[in-house]
Length: 258
Picture (cartoon, one colour):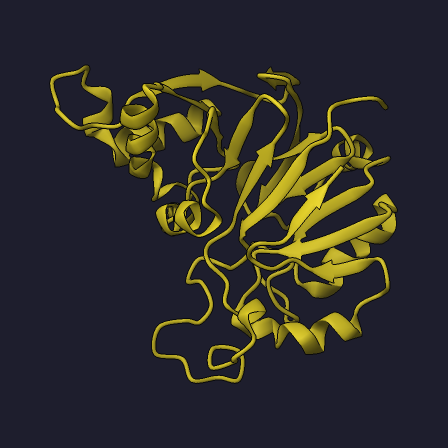
C-alpha cells in the first residue's frame, strides 16, 4: 500500500492512575527505569500534512510539552472516560497561538460527556478563554482527517462500546476486553497492532496480558505493542523478556514509523 509515511508516538501508556501511583511504594512505582513511568494513555499520529491526537487524558499538557509538539489539527476520542478526556481544555494554546478551532471527532455518546464535562466550551463565545471546539460525529463508518484515513474498530470495555482505530497498517485499541469476530477481521493484515494489557490477573473491563497475547495470535500482526499498563503488570524490563519476540510493551515516548 503506497501512502505517505506516518509517525505514531505513544504519548502515554499508563492506566487511569498512571505509574507511579500516588502513595504506592511497589517495585514498579519506585523503579528508576524511565520506561516504568507511564502517563495516561494517548497516541499522536502525524503525516506529512496532518497531526491528530487520540485521547486527551489528564497528562495531555505535560505530554505536549515533553514531546515538543507544536501543532495539532484534530482530537480523536476512543471513549468518554475521565482518563481519556480530562485534558481537553489544554487545546486552548492551539486555538490562540495557531488561530485554530479544534476539530474533535467523537461518537455522539462521547460528545454528550464532553458537553457535560466542559460545558463552558459549548455556550457560544460568551465565555472568554474557553476552548474553541468543532465537534465532528463519528461511528463505525470509515472517515478521513486531512490526509489520514481512519477505519473505526468497535470493541467493548465491559458494557461500554468503545472505538479503536486502524490507520493504514497500524491498529490501535485501548480500554477493551472484547472484540467481536467481525471487528477482528478489520484488524487482520495490520503490520502493527497496539492493544491494552492491564495486568497479569484477570480484570472485569480490560484485557489482561494472557488475553491480549491471544488476540495477537488471532490477528497475526508483524509486531504488537501493549499499552494502558498498570503497575500490577510488573517491571518493563522483566515483562519485556517474558514476551514472544513479536510483542513488546509500549512506553511513553516510543515512536513507530510506517
